[in-house]
Structures are given as C-alpha cells and as structure tokens.
Image (cartoon, rainbow, N blue to C red; front, side):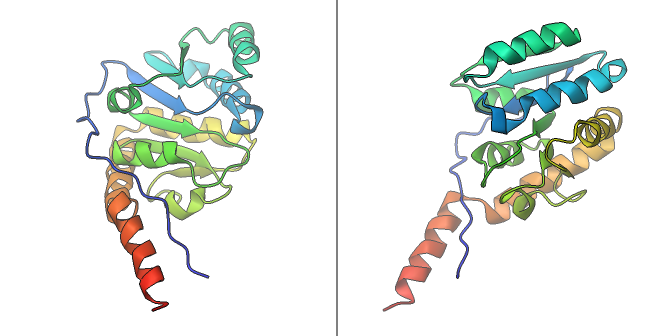
Length: 196
C-alpha cells in the first residue's frame, strides 16, 4: 500500500496582507460534520479574548440558518458569515489563524490552502489531518467535538504572536515540501512506472 498525499497548484496564491484586526478564518461547507457549532461554543467560552478579533466563516450549506441563529443567541457580533466566495486565497492572505473544527473528514484541501498561505492552523484529530498538521509543529490539534480544547488552542494563538508566526511559517514550509501538485503527480507517475 502506497500513500500519495493530495497536492495543490498554488501559483496564484497572493502575498500575505494581514488585516489590521486579527482575523480567524474558517473555510468549509456549512454542514453538521464540519463542526461549526462546536467552534461557536468555543468562541463563546473565550469572548473576553475576542476584542479586536474578527471571525470569518467562509462557505455555505444547509446549516447556515441554524449557525447564524446560534451566533445571535451567543452574542458573537464579531462572527461574520461571508457565504460562498471565489476569492478564498485573498481572504486567507488577510487572516492570521485558520480553524477547521471538523468532526469527520479526509484530507481537507482547505487546510492545504491555509498552510500555503502561512496560517497558524487549529484542526481536529480525524481522517488524514494529523498527517499534515502535527501538534505544535505545523499547527495545533484538538479532539473533534471538544469545544474546551478548541477554545484553549484559539486563546494560545490569539495571545501569542510568536507562536502564530512560527506555526504559520512551519505550515507553509511543510506544504511547500510535501503538498505541491507537481509532487503528487510525480509520485503517481513513479508508481505507475514501477509496474513496467
């Protein structure tokens, strides 16, 4: 059994242009398994750390109405639902922290895109995520569905700029070495050639 990790073409990735406010981005379909409700619970736990922080939820799906109502009930006025967007790389270039609170996943492209944009990443221990996000090396890992762990990880990144920058730099470096499209294609070609 040979594993070939997904790679993406990042030729058009824009340069980082961090916003004046600290921005946390989440790029994902708004479905139950992606854990956005867990993220909102985590944000409610740390509201006293969110002054000067904007949270962008990018994507759309059948959970949007429920999540917007939950945001309202929790009083999270700095959480913004941006919907489906075609300028995700530009939005990532403006943000500093990427979070994917997914409960069940495979090898999310959104995380790879966040790595190439130099984000400090918080993700969950499911599917292939731990193969690219190594805890405290290329990001922070939480248990799926655990809003307390997610809250603690977010506070670490919000309050520690040097940690954010180190994890973002390591994530970008790892992605550059392992998650490029041409590397994926080369590995697949090599596997095919080995049979001849």
